Image 1 (cartoon, rainbow, N blue to C red):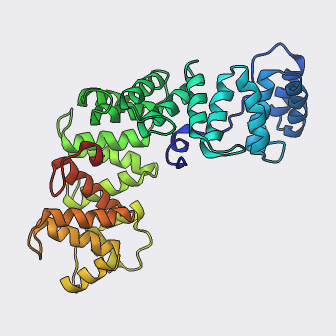
Image 2 (cartoon, rainbow, N blue to C red; image 1 turned 60 degrees about the horizontal axis):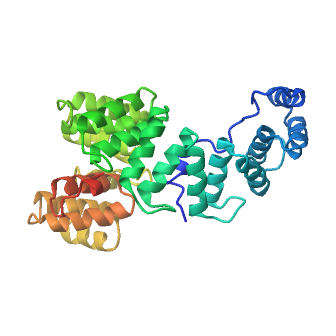
Image 3 (cartoon, rainbow, N blue to C red; image 1 turned 30 degrees about the vertical axis):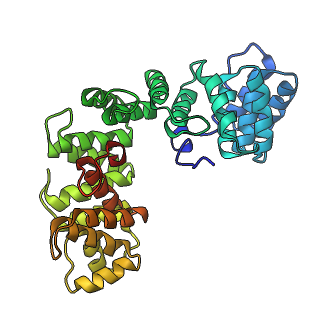
Amino acid sequence: MIHRSSFSLFFGFLFAAIINYTTHSQTMEEATAHHEKGEYKAAVDMLLKLAERGQVSAQSALASMYGQGVGVAQDHVSAAKWFSKAAKKNDAFAQAKLAYLYAYGLGVDQDNKKAVSLFQKAAEQGHAEAEFNLAIAHEKGLGVLQDFVEAATWYSKAAQNGHVQAQSSMGLMYYEGRGVPRDFVAALAWYQIATEQGDAKAQNNLGLMYTKGHGVEQNYELAVGWYQKAADQGLKFAMNNLGVMYDNGFGVEQSDEEAIKWYRRAGQSDLKSGSKALLQSGLIDNGVSIEALQQMAENGDPVAQLRFAQMFETGDGLERYPRQAAIWYQRAAKQGNGQAQARLGMLYETGTGVPQDYVMAH
């Protein structure tokens, strides 16, 4: 089963309003007029008549209305039915949307292979969304064998067609050297193109490049600026990275208060007390013995696991032991702790306590 973090994260709004097809049909023009006026029921009635006569654009538009539940009760089965009819007539939009339905089992039995087949047909017609999703399928091995070269090929096509998430993903492929030679300059170029369209992930990753000096001169101030832009759009990784910058005084005046604020926004809003928030950020652990901390960590408390990992990594209160640090970061990261995930990525990048692995690092 494909997780929604795969295709849906990037696929965009599932059922676009596509009634404004260019056509010489007076009745299609009437359907368009009804839709633009918000007379959705009348639009659906008109589209149904046209769809039953075999008009492809009406079939795709009607499927969209069913999928959205606009002018008619939401019905994925009916959406799949009409997308299927249009897809058989080689309508790229219908093929891409039907592929999405198969990817998630909406109105049809979930089937990754059918989804990929339909994405392939639409992508070969230059449909940017389909190109992008086909790239995801190859990158993650969803319905096809995992193939980074093929993934990079389709990301590149979608990126050149102006697909912003594909542009960001292409930057990541170059940054990690997956399917293409590792090239920080190329990664930077794609991230910059994506940031011009406001892509939060590209903003965060551009900040990371400035933080590490990869492909650019290291500049913490610029890094903070890009993290802030991404954080303002709600990206939790960027919020965590801002916390790290404030925690260490990188590019900003060091501030425990700001660090805690951003760590909490990154996913620690469920913390019940200020003292625990401070412990979470790794700033203080006053009044908590190592024995008590260890017990909390072993009982599954991600806050304690994070602090325990930090102590093993730095030798603060415990003998420095990078392997144990990695183990405890992993345990906290598996529970969704953003700071642990970020730190674990750094360990993989440097090969500290774990085998060096640039893919795992990001």
